[in-house]
Image 1 (cartoon, rainbow, N blue to C red):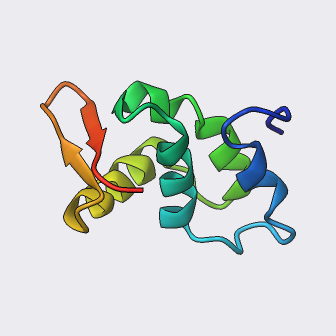
Image 2 (image 1 turned 90 degrees about the horizontal axis):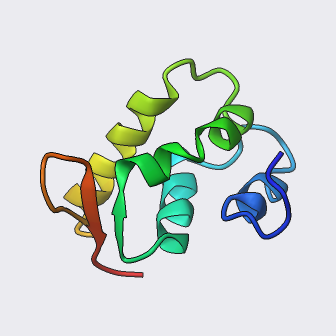
Length: 91
């Protein structure tokens, strides 16, 4: 479990029932706590917390990438380059 003050602590603490929250919400909550310019590695650093929150998903990194693509498609993120650099466009 994430320690208090850790960026995903609020997400994990708020579940109540495992898996109730949606992946997109969880990833967006993480992204909002990162600097405006961030890397895929920074999001991956939360994969253990996400794995505990979504125990039936065995492909956490692929799911993270998928959700980042969805956030890009909705205009919330911009893919800066193909080296894993992103920029948050909105809150």
